[in-house]
Image (tube, rainbow, N blue to C red; front, side):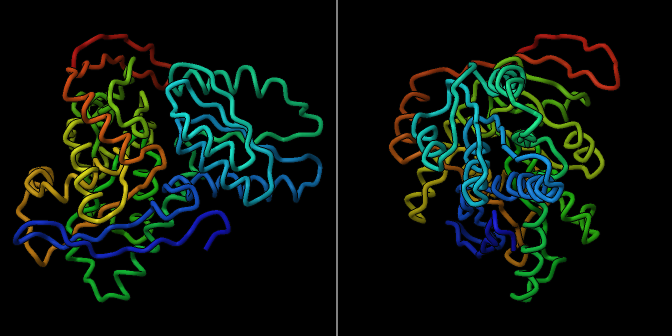
Length: 360
């Protein structure tokens, strides 16, 4: 167990319906920051801080950019490790989340209309002013770093341990459902499954909301794309692009992709709160939606599920929403037609990017 993240329970959860598969939820909402990001980001900060302190030449200082949950994960890890931390968030980040980050002792700077602009400000303005003769910066990307994926992969070790303790046959596990934003969580799960030679045996169903479904679009087009604007209310999933590793893993392991409408996800969040007395933000609600709509899950997996089958759902957590927020968002969504995002192809290996605009 790490000093910066918790070992979380994998619990059987009973959802409404008949002849359903067995659902087990991995409760990452019980992490110090309220989301799975404590694993990967905590791992990144801890490993680098230990390395810098062993070298004994400079003082480690953490710099993170985030729409909310990743910055809070960085701040809680730094609070635990007594490290100075600066987090840059865009103007779209809720004031409630800004205050939660500040309450850890971290410095919060608000700049940019979305995460990418906040990240550019962090790297181009804030980190440029560091006295690098005495300070070694630890830069924290929200999802695209192998050390972050390594941290996230630890949940697979815990899952295997719990299934073994409860005598659940791994052959009965027919899928893992997780929400996909930039792909950090997904990459970690894949790497964890690879460790047990299960990456080709257990399919992953990646769930996104309409308006930030960049993973689904990339899979359909066979090219990595970048959205020019995020229109989904699931801001925790609202990254404009996925990591290259995510794109490669998805093709290698035939990952399934489901896109759910914002309104339906919010309704699922509120239903889950009513059923189980726990608040789920939209990023987590996207995955929970599969448990309430098994037909969508079966369609994605391509086969019928029986009561002996097991589905694992990563309850990724998040600290951005209250029940009141969800209710207000639902009202707004019902009164507004959602705008379709535009995208452009991402550029790799020094290939010139072709910019395209298309309604999804």
